[in-house]
Image 1 (spheres, rainbow, N blue to C red):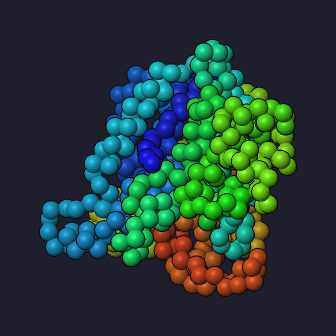
Image 2 (image 1 turned 90 degrees about the horizontal axis):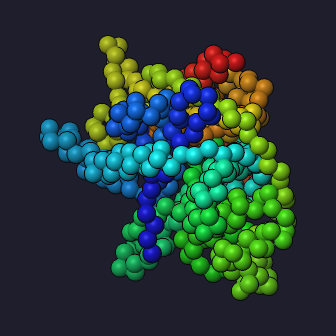
Length: 450
């Protein structure tokens, strides 16, 4: 089995003459803002020649890829080497970073060459049965959002852009079991469910790109897609990817159209074989049909870079010793900072997006008890709009939590399961002050264009 790790690109233009907007989605855990700027630098000439006014780099956040943040492969070895010698050993492999830069550059060139005119359609559907939040309070966006671009030239394939918040970590430790390895670690890379969603959409004649949504601590619930069948975690990942693909393709269809689609694409979930087994759930049964709206050709985007203080000494250590690529700057008072950015995106009247540099907890978007004590209003309350979040856009800032709830490690009560859960998410974060910095700068950007 093989699953290539990809840089997928979509270039959008509203025909106003204001320029092209590029979105790059890299199959990786995350890329530091300093690495994003390397990609932009590599695209400088292409941007000038093609009137590219905005380049945004997202990560799909797969957990079984090459270590793009440097903290999982050999952090101790890097630390010992870099504190004892001037011959720097980077936690993020330079050959991997070079491949991402060159692959992204080539994908942008290909996307520009393939640009065409057409109509865009917007849909959203609730996929709560396919997601779950691991951390109390349980607050998360359960919708999957779809933009479907249909070219006027019928010889060109349509494109689906999808976003929803979900950690792609289904393909875990048992894809290639090795009995000689006591830890039974997965030794193969996997693009997780995204690979299989793309393959299904390709088989139906579509291009596909996934932009990570409000990922927070949300993971995939594979009950409906695994259907009680025996199989490894990787088998579950494949089935989840296919089922997400079927929902994307079928959310606007009638039942007869869905049945025809299932047959056309080869019945990837085995309805014909397994459909009568107890516990098997046919993907199109019970799936609501949702309307699609034509999107006005309006595309607006604005970003803001700024420095944010790093209060988490672990992140300071990782950056200062080149284990991670997060830039670390020190002022004359001994405080540490890094450079990050936020953005605001509008696509027609349908999709308004906070482009977030980290993994934003859902209560900061939607409110609720988890937002108590936060000095700012939650995003949807502040804006009065049904804004969505695209996380891990242009940085890998870690978890973005309400400072009132912030702790590096602790125990908290989860009323959904009447249990006390461990909470260590903020070990991977810039610190308590990062959240108001991110949200505050986003509000500045939002207010400046209203």
